[in-house]
Every structure is written in C-alpha cells, then in structure tokens.
Image 1 (spheres, one colour):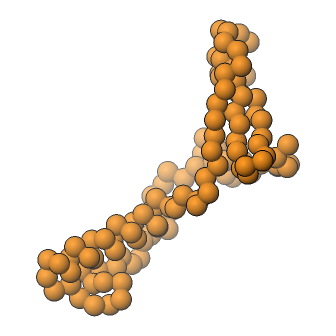
Image 2: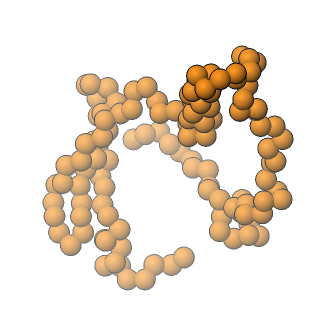
Image 3: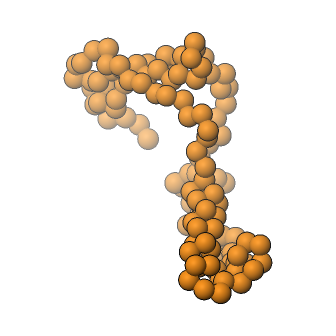
Length: 121
C-alpha cells in the first residue's frame, strides 16, 4: 500500500550484535567546538543587555533547528474512527495527505496479543 519493501533494523539490545546500541561514551563522536555564546552569528560581540536579548533569540533558534529539528511545513492530518469496541480495541486511522486522497490503515491495540498467550522473543 505504501510501497515499503524493506525496513532497516534498529539498534539491537544484544551488545555483541553488529548493530548494537552504543552506550559507551568513549565511542561517541566528541564535540570539538562550541560557539562563544557572547558573540553573534555574524561575529559581532555582545556589548549590553539589549544585545544579549537578541543573542539569546539566536541561541534558541540554533537549538531548535539543530537539536530538536524542524517539523515539516505540511504535516498530514490524522483522524481516528473507532469501528468496533470489544475486549480488543480496533479502529481505522486515516492519513489525509491530499484533500482528495487518504490512506486507510487498520489499527488494533496490543490487547489482542494477550489472547494468544505468551509470545516468543
């Protein structure tokens, strides 16, 4: 339906696996440079409290763009409609990508899995 043929595996919980999650700080890339917080992006030095207020906005913007990341301009609207209520919750998720198109994705909660008993690892 979405044209996804293969998924890349995420980090493994097994430390011996080739794609193991890294929890060793010595293997992380070190931050070698932090910009001076008292110098504007254009190189000018902060001289007073008003300058600091402007620089503070620059720093917040930098943090938003580099640490949090940006949201896409056109985030699709997602609406939920419950189609039945039983011991397991089932419903449909509609993702509106274009005003005249939508994708119907059947959804169910993990409550269904309890009926199956214990699942293998």
